[in-house]
Length: 411
Ligand SMILES: Cc1ncc(COP(=O)(O)O)c(C=O)c1O
Image (cartoon, rainbow, N blue to C red):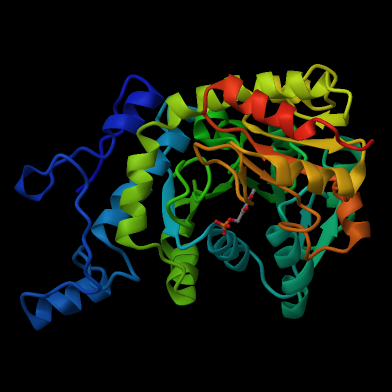
């Protein structure tokens, strides 16, 4: 089973991309809930293990439902991108048990002891802990720098021996800071350094990092790609097919980082409405950002779609729209933040982003609590910052809820 990537638009690919020749003419992707696959003979088993014959053997190594979901995500990330001779970009995706495991496969398959990885201060807490905490135990060095400054970046690349990877999260969690992907990729390519992009907040509908020269993209599919908060998942996508089929695949298989057929099925279902959801998420986020910016209890709103945001120009350059996550600072700090969160009646009090309902959280006490306050501040996260993933409810319902929750706040 293989999906055909020939659709006139990314949205049609998202909707139809997993309709193919399924057993019994099933309309939707069957869930192949089988840990193992049978062989007709010892010879066939041998041929499959040696790679002489293609076919499934064991679901940690590959599963038909998972494979279709992988092809669909790779098709979306590659959609409309062509190479120098006009040939369509070919990508290979590996569907993982979580965004964290997709990141682990990516880092562990690219880095060895003695290598260095460079990233930017605005990062998801788990990514920060993995790169700047865990990798050091394996002799991998990590540097943090402002990737917005091309002169500084090039100087750093030139003076850092064995710099193998630059990792970018854009837009970043939770500041929505954006990095110029084309600029970083061009500098990195001049020096043979690979670039990886966490595209979780944008999804391929809003941004396609391979268009700007990225080598790898990964997502927490838990978020907007699934869209309904029904499973934890991740995906790693690469354009070096040989590398993806060998080093990356072996790492994934040995880590046991594979997804499962049910989550893969949920992902393909969620993806059908990706464009519709992302447009509505963005419409609502723009209105929420405008409302918050004019509210007297709010000190500052961080939304890359707002006029005055430092990264608005780069957002417009590389993204279709600004996305649906924003954060804001209440004048009353932590106390006001907690009071506000407790009063919410429609919006959901929860970490995570990208579900159809509006989610509101407090990074300092939740997602980024593993970082020291000083490190948090370096990443732009103050103690009173509130993060919002704006959902697709009618906009009036969201704004009325925010308004009533902010009534009587101390500031
Ligand atoms: C930007 C980003 N990348 C990666 C992850 C990790 O994904 P998961 O929780 O699916 O492992 C998250 C989780 O919040 C995230 O926000």
